[in-house]
Length: 530
Image 1 (tube, rainbow, N blue to C red):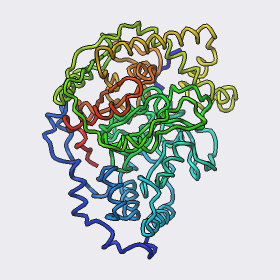
Image 2: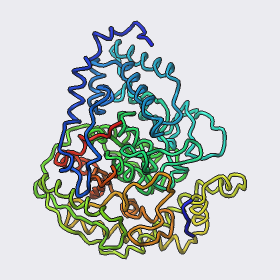
Image 3: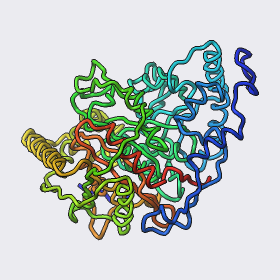
Image 4: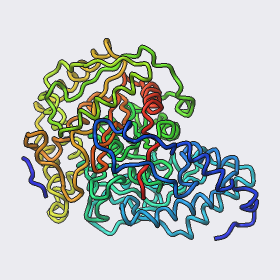
């Protein structure tokens, strides 16, 4: 079935003059990310005249996540000043982008920031995110905040407890200021819903932000948050990262365990980190990762390693360019050209780049994906469909996913699992010849925010609402770690990204390559005007 487009300090801390870094000094540090570059040389083959590096508007919000953590720990900037700076930034720009939702009362947040300052004054710190303003994705159970999943179903009540991801960020010192917007049930890489409305692209507010972690990506790019969490089943971390010129990581299966969950063995979806640069993504991963005894597939490696240096020589590393899978994937004109142009930055980092062939029947991989995804979604969303009152209030795409999942037979499920195994083995064989594999993050550039989803791409009709996102599903099916990095811009501030796929459990190596690429390309130094 296809669809048509449808205050004051508390007195315990030192004075602001003593504890806070001078604005001029902060501006110098934040400026490291904003070094002016000739943008035309960074923009692939597209026309990028409309995009330019911007003058920073606030030295605190322009700090990277790592810089901010160090400044707070050294008491060069107070938690109150940080909170005020980010809340002021949200007040200024969020009305134009709609990335942050369920924003809490400023007085309550400043009181929490003051408490964080008082703890520092006593020599206490809760962790690397001490005093950080954070906004979990609206799918994350967060104590004291509602979790709507973008569903227009009820008057949502604040949660009484945290999910695992929120628990880990809170334990690391984060202060939750609200949530980031997402599409209904996280379905479709277009962040809109009937609860909060549409989130708009950080570089061009006429365009979609992507999704489902669209609110998080825009909040990071527009300096409303220092870094953010997201989640990913069909590119929900990767696609909005590519379309908003930021960095994200879809971690290996089990690297960032999800709780609560309807299926502890499922793992088509995962939560993960997003940031303005690779170091920030690795930094947040060090907080989010780690084993949990309730989840048998969670990985037990020490997550502290992700907070270490990402420096590594990639001289001689072999990169396999999968492109459009030998013409199998329809793509919008310009996407592959910009991505191919960006491959030279891997070569600048010392890598060799050659074309790679999947060697698999991709139609079987797609059929397997549709079966497994819809079955997974129906396991927790079926009650919405079976209740006539709630069914009519969920969007048609969600109804189709649930209907498809409920109709899956045991024979079809068995075939889907066999084909998924075959696809994984085909990809795994590619690592005999290549160290990493590269794909675009999307098959189209960000489109008009009023469009629900593209119905035609590269001259081909899309037979489902998510067929145009197939490039993301091929990575999800492997359970391998996948980084998303900027690739460049076409005209009208339309950004594109690259997926970096590494071998099993090679999350750290993927981040190291992303960092080397970032240094060679310079994309992380760019930011949108606002």
